[in-house]
Length: 114
Length: 114
Image 1 (cartoon, rainbow over the protein chains, first blue to last red):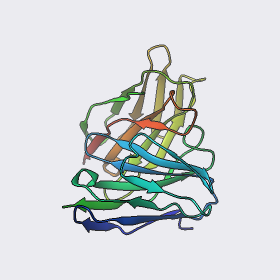
Image 2: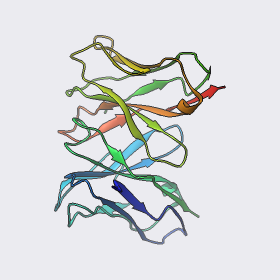
Image 3: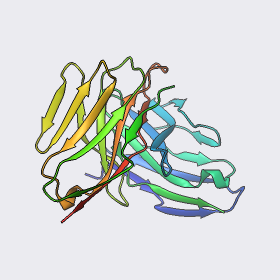
C-alpha cells in the first residue's frame, strides 16, 4: 500500500527552466492537492482538484499549472522556474477534502532554483 | 483570508514532561481542526483532529483542547518521549473559499530530551 508517491525527491533547476513534479495515489481519493512548505510559513496550498478534469487555484498558484486526467495522478508543472520557487513541495490526497477528512501527504520534492 | 497563529516556534521538553502547543484562528465556517506531525524528510501525517462540538479530544498521550469563543485550540502531549521529537502543525479551515482550503500554522519544532 504505497499511499501518495512523489517523484523526484530532489531537483535542481536553473532560472527559466521548466519541469513537472509527479504525484500518484492508490487510495482512490477524489481530492488531491499540492502544497509548498517554506521555513516559518507552514504549508500553503498551490492548486487542488476534486476529481478528474476539475482543478482550482489555492493560495499561491502563480507560476504553476496542474491538470487531472485520471483519479490517480496529479502532476504539478513549473512553467519557468524562478528562485522564489525554491521550496519543498508536497502532494496530498484526501477522501472528502481537507475540511472534512485527513490529508495524506507524500514525502515531498525538494526543489532548488539557481 | 484566514491567519493561523501558532506558538511557540520551538519547544524543548524533558522526557516525561508535558508539551503544549497553541494555535489561534480568526474565523471559520467549517468545524474540522487537525494537528499534523512531521518527521524530518517525511510528509506531514495526521496526529489528531477535533470537531468543536466538543471542547476536548484525547487519543493516548495526545489531547486537543478547543475554546470556540476564544478561537483557540491547543495540543497537549503528556509524558513526552524522544520519539515525539518532530514538527507539529495546526490547521484551520479557510472560510473565504467555498471548500477545500486549510490554513496551516507556521509549525512548532519539538525536541524531547532523554
